[in-house]
Every structure is written in structure tokens, then in C-alpha cells.
Length: 307
Image (cartoon, rainbow, N blue to C red; front, side):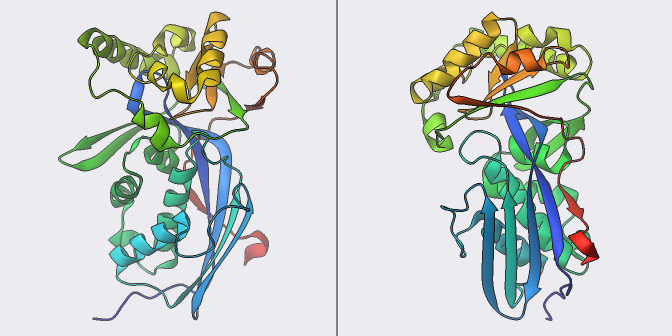
């Protein structure tokens, strides 16, 4: 059986940063943010060439171990076969190891690029299959769902398959992320979580998660109570005490703040009038970045100069 045919032209994929959990929505909620990685992929005659600029340029592998390359390879297997060679160029802006979905962005970029350079790719690997594949590689669907779909997403597993819905976040929301200089491994932060939690805490989180949908989409004035969490944030404190201290300080000032993903970045929800003031609360040791909401998700874009 003949393998797939590939496009001669390169493709460019843009993927957004994401923040998962959002307080009580542990392993379920995700929000796409206006900070992007771009990759350009071209099928070559032979070999593998990887070029990286920006975040991770000094530390990331430039071979088959690179997460974008691994994701490309996994998707090509499902699409019918591997190309003879690959050229991959990454322009990274999403900080690594900070809880802003850098691994999910790399995974989504790779599988979307593989589909885009394969003739007939979308008919073999549709959007539902993309989510399932990205979840299989990542291990959980919250970040990859937001990265693929944009906006606010709620993800779950059904019969062993990943599923997600997309909602429109309120236009007035202004996310501010506080990024520390030192990363924390997701495995370290997740390893601190207990195997069981008190029933009263689970019940409280269920109510807050339901309220959070209303707060993020229609009534942002409810965000402070809606972002209360009892399932994961405080348990992670030994790995990131400064993060939890900043979350509690912001919340003490009336700002709806949460740990972004597994941390150590802090995500604060504010509005246009208060964003600058909120950005100054953290002080030294934190890079405060006011971001837009991403409502489009991962996409294939034209190459510069029409290449």
C-alpha cells in the first residue's frame, strides 16, 4: 500500500499559551491566552533539521527527542507514514516549566503541522481525532483542548476518549500572568497531590467549578468566590511557596488569582481599569504580563512573503 503524499510547500502553525485548572476546575478547565509559539515545517528529501529561537533555544533537543518532532512523528504514523525528511523551525515565546502550557503548545503544533503537510490529512485526522491524539501524548486534555479550540474550554473523558466544549469568555476579562524566574516541573507539582481528599472539599470545588463557568462567561464580578479551590493549589505549596503566597496576597486585595496549571505562574483575572494596578502588586522576582484572551486557538497561517 502506497504511503501518504506530502505538500512541497512549508506550513506555518501558531499555537497559544494556555492556563489550566483556573482554580476549582482541576484537570478540566482551560483558557487560551494571547501569547504564541510559531513553528514552520517543511517536508525535505532526507534527514531532520531543527532550529529553535526564543524560549528553550539553549536547552531543547534538536533531534528526534524534541517534543514537536515526536508529535509530528506520532501524527504521521496515523496519517499513513513518515516523510523522507523534515525541516522544523520553532519560534518560542511561551515560557517553559511555568504552567502556561508550553508542552501542550508543542504537541498541538506538531500534530496540526503533520496534518497540514499531508495531502488529504484533515480527512484522516479530523478535529476530534486531533484532540484525542493530543490528549494521548500529553496525558490529560485540559491544556490541549484550550490550545486547539481557543477561548474557555471544559474537557473530560468519555469511554476513554477525550472530549471538550468551547465557551466564549467575557469580553471584559483581562488576564495578567505573574511569571517567576525559576520553573517547577509538572511532575513535581502533581506528585504532591494526595490520592484522596475530604468529601466536603470535593463538594465545595464542584460548586465553585459550576459557578466559575458563569463568572468567566457572563458575570466576572463573581470571579473571586468562583476561583476558590480546595483540591490542588495549597497541596502544591511545598514546591512553590512564593506562588501560593502571591495568590493569597492578590486574593486578599480582592483580585481573583489562581495558580496557572501546575504552576509556578500566577494568573489573575482583572478588567481594563484595574489591570495596571494589579500588575504592580507582585513586586520583584515576578514578570507581570498583561495578555489578551485568545479566541481562535491553534491555526495554520500563511508564511511571511507568501512562501
